[in-house]
Length: 365
Ligand SMILES: [Zn+2]
Image (tube, rainbow, N blue to C red; front, side, top):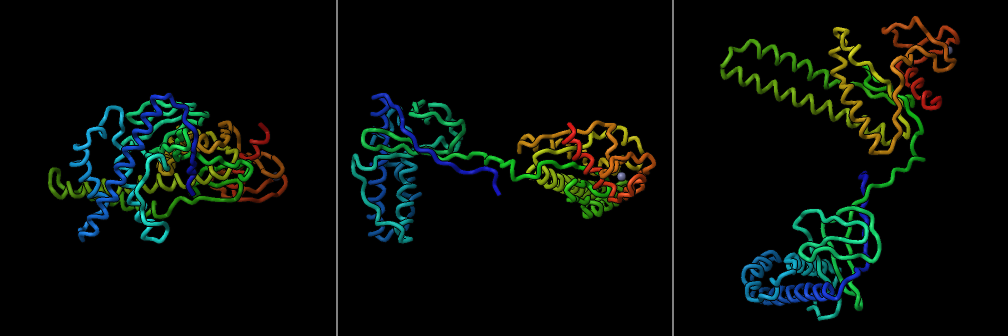
């Protein structure tokens, strides 16, 4: 589901009399172009020629515009003629699909309108003004939120000119629909355990690829320096490395997006990563899990989704506390995968117990 929604705006322009004349000029050129296109379409069709609106447009730009110098007058945005042909094509498409009548010639003063863009560049708007290509800044009747749009249509209703366009706006995240608090325990075997009971395993395919990576590395070392075989082996190794890096990042993104999208407050351990890294073999596994990357993603995504982020104190014993009675289990060893409370006898998966303790912090702060 996209987090953006398309909104439309139509609002009145507050124009000076000079600008009103300029708008009429644009609408006139649009009408002329559209009518030329329609007449030529009919002629070519009757003559049995093959064409589409693009060929008409190219011909018009190359040969017709030169004949009518007033189209190229100063202050006139040349994009109107492009959109005039698009309008004509849309009218025929609707007609062929039985959704509309056969296109009619446009009459002066009736549905005067034109469309312009900025050649694919975003056009900023906001407050009470918008900058139109070539035409420049124009005043709006009412204030708008700040944003950008790709094209605008300007039309006349009675003696007033209106502007309409669409723009993307971020969907408001409905905080009430989310789980209020989640504690996240990060581990080596299980990548993340949430206090809600949801777990994310370290992907097994990653482990498989890491084995393959080690094999390729050994192979490279056996190849003679400077040989073409060595170059080949090196390329293979680089490819595998890139693949692993991509898959790992992709997995982490899925997890961090899930966490931030579905929870209002997130409690994480403030990992003493440098302290853990000194622990030989463990260091490899931890860097593999991408804990730095995990934290980086959670930090920026919680901002994006409007979550509150809490870090537990480095010395908060989330693994050692009983999540039921609060007793501190001093003798719990790293290898103990199940937490058994010596005080109340409560038993739970070690990581889940830790995650629940982290979640509890949100209520005590
Ligand atoms: Zn207990």
